[in-house]
Length: 341
Image 1: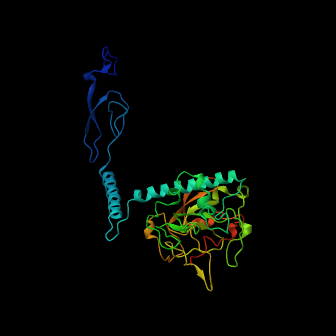
Image 2: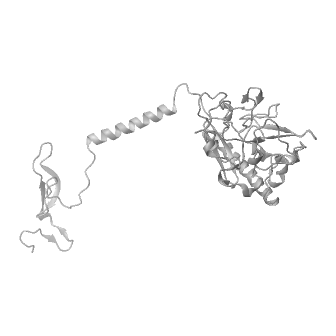
């Protein structure tokens, strides 16, 4: 028998008997029905919003109409913005990102392999780097870095070519953002094509004679690996339109990022051409590299390998943050970089 004032329970099932249940009467409020349609237990704690409803853990109330309208409106705005972004009238079609990503990744593998060959060469030569030219009195391929490092990497010809430079080489020795350079062995007449340059401050070959008009300073040369103080920021190989490149703190970039060779000049004498300033990688294909940059910002990037062995894609805009030669002084750089000329 149940105690007075407490609901009777079924001893076998342990549940409230139907006699102890009644409909919940919720205090009448504007816009709220008088009965919530749920069952309550006698003497259950009173909730002013729910009444004496069975079970304290009642389901969470659903979204209100206003909340649903706000959520649907936000989703609609996001969808409209995405559609407008993907379908702009008059915008020329760009190659799919994968079409540019795959050659860029293969290019990174190439420069990384060239850097590894350079480090193996240095290990076999008491720490001395392989210079751009081993002997300045000879133009044979074996006296240039391409021939000197050929035995240190597996793919003799393929590793020199950037997959993004797919156009046929020009008749000139220099290349472009989308075409390789050409080196001709004057002894044999054989032509070699490539898409990368060695840092001209890594080593110095025999019989070097300082020309009157040249930007290379012998005191800035890394003669051996121990002279490198910033291996993770000292370039070894990079994309270029020539097989050799250098950079000084005060050097200004060219405005032509498709074929900079011959564009940067000073009155009366040619200035050092910075052959690595090409927009070969980045947000647009190499064939669309800017021919005349009108702003101080440099679009595009090149792939580069460093003395510590790693390789990465480096924006042209930050090339002055690297340590190109032994005495590089970041304080001499006009931030963020000298204006294009």
